[in-house]
Image (cartoon, rainbow, N blue to C red; front, side):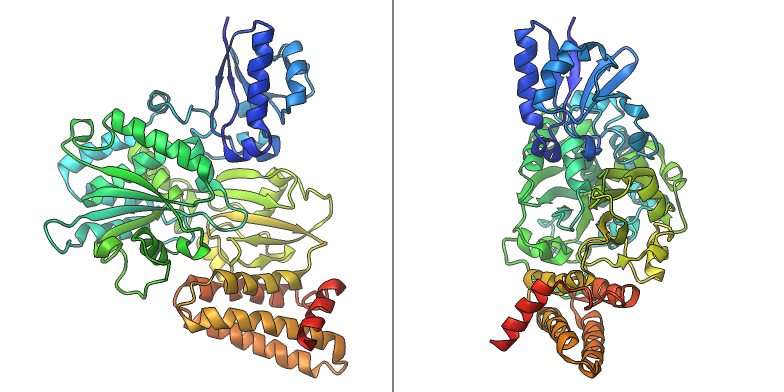
Length: 541
């Protein structure tokens, strides 16, 4: 009898040795004359358990992990192919693992379950149902697909949280400049925020959901060409996406006459420029056109004049991959999840100094405290948590008094924070908040496109002001200079917020001001001596 095994082909699993484990499994089972069918699936997102080996049994999939090459022989000897519970790495039925069982998976419902290369497997798990429904709706009314997205309440998952349906409506209503021109669908897969990986995980675990979402978007607004602007640091995602796209063409889900509908849509993967700023939609479009990634002034909006000057939808991976479930289940089903204006679910990504890192998809409305308690299991070091940064390198640092805030766009805005792409980075009490504030300014100085003065010069001045504050704290016993520099830093932050051309410059002050407000007792005073000495030497030169 042949036993089916699942071992992730996800980047994180490979980094933890999954490929070596796969080779060892194949070698050892062949040596033992044991018949296996090894499927390289996507990750379930339980990164603290990777590589996670799953065995198909009559009761369902049984999990073991994290598995190393050295574990393979003992696993096989102790009956892993029969789902034996005696091995120390035995985790029980995968679906019953608390980390997974407590989630509300909609966008990621197939992640880690299907073979990412198999379109038949995708179809067997309700794949392309949304596309079929979209084609049927389109025959009734050209506006019907967009209406469904608007009713669902879906907002951009890339961080800006702009209502997706309104963006689509704008592109649908926009006119191209000539009969030869066309509208475009652009997927922003240039995932650059620290602590984020949901885009990559989705593309590597369930690439057809992104493809299906982009096709539906094209049908909805009359676009026939799509591009996935993929972060260049994601070679595994590129490999999987390109194979999935080729399969979609082969099965007539892409190209001319999609599934006999008379509709056309073409799709390509384009690699990013390796710049953080190209995650900003207008800079991304410049890069996609073969130019340097500089931010464009708005208006005009990309929905009016986007790629090559034509109406363009620019959406994040998760936004587009969520579209199929809305069209498959209906807008009311999706809107049932969430609170207030934040409808549906968001994939929260636990990273940093955390014991159980991974992806957690939940409806809006839970709190940071709940996620840390139910999923994180504390810091990796075992030390108390001091701060949590949510929303990437330009997100606020939240103190313990703020961890009960509901994870909701408006609730976070009310406390001068951002949900962003859903990245949650945990820091224990050894972190220097001064270094984190300095890093925010330094990050902007390095990654700024340089087009506008407040961002380009303001971030550089920000680093200098913080360095001078450190020196003043050592040399000025009266504290007068430190107070003056503190006021200068606040003024500088306000100038960047009000004067920057895009979110890069206007959001850089968010982490700095959050530290000055909520970690005031630690700001400057907690700078390590070695760093302070380095700054002093630099100033003397």
